[in-house]
Image (cartoon, rainbow over all chains, first blue to last red; front, side):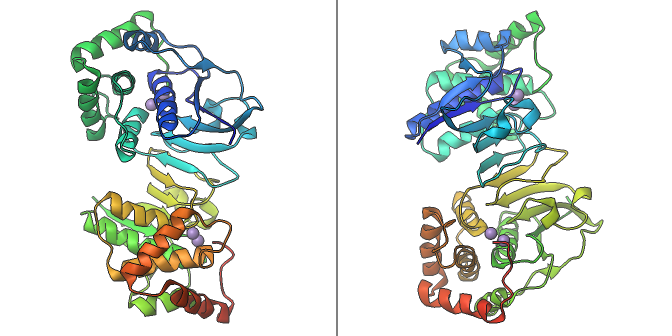
Length: 198
Length: 198
Ligand SMILES: [Mn+2]
Ligand SMILES: [Mn+2]
Ligand SMILES: [Mn+2]
Ligand SMILES: [Mn+2]
């Protein structure tokens, strides 16, 4: 079995980066080789999160090279938001929370979209389904993604599932949800580089 | 909350009919109102299954009428295979095992596709996830769908998940997998009306 790359959308936000990192880790824990990647610059907000939890950003890729056997899309499904050569690669999975649009495959795949506020909320559930306990760092990454996508649980897209996940994750990550959340959102707001995508 | 209709593809096969019936029942058990429907004639094979387990076919619909609030697609996602006015209705969910193609929504939804041989295999899993025990009839319907889509576990699309589900379901349904399976496939073959769609 060849290499599998996991990445989110272009102009990566915190959900995209956190979901790629944490899902690659889950795949590895479950015995599947997978590497996280990113399609653009890490935002100031995301860098704050990575520094806080001592995690390195995924490697930047411009396109999927030929050593890659399949890709997993997180936090997006629309081809325009994905890697430029997405049409040439095998998509093994999609984990997302957006409407489905401009997406198609030649073969059956594992496609999981749920109408929640954040991909991280789905990934938190997938850890439970697989009986895998989140590390403090990974809980911190997923928590940060939820805070980012739901603006600290206040956006209209925030669901009960997101709120419950955030409280659980804050506990595992060992942070105070409101204090950490405000610091994190401020770190991004300062530099005014938050993506238009959620 | 308005009415929700659950249906599979045009030229319905056994997976399409069984999945609509069983998923509507699961939704009702979980406290959500939902009704199964079908977009075409019941095949001879499917009628054999319905008669065997004493279940009525879902109601035929030509289009989704205005009393319907949302629809759930099972065993398909391509709009060409769906109800004619699919572009005008809110798609709340998709449960499928085919490639994704010619599908899009305006809003986030619950979209669950898995690369297995049959929608019924996913529905069997969803009962477990929700802690709902299948009735003998519903187990018989799901089993029949797997037998139909995998040609009694022999097609190249049949996965370990389908095989395991079929054995489990045969036990609950109280039938001998091979004997029932052959009788069922023969009932359809006689009339030569099996759909090209799996
Ligand atoms: Mn997101
Ligand atoms: Mn995003
Ligand atoms: Mn099918
Ligand atoms: Mn079918």
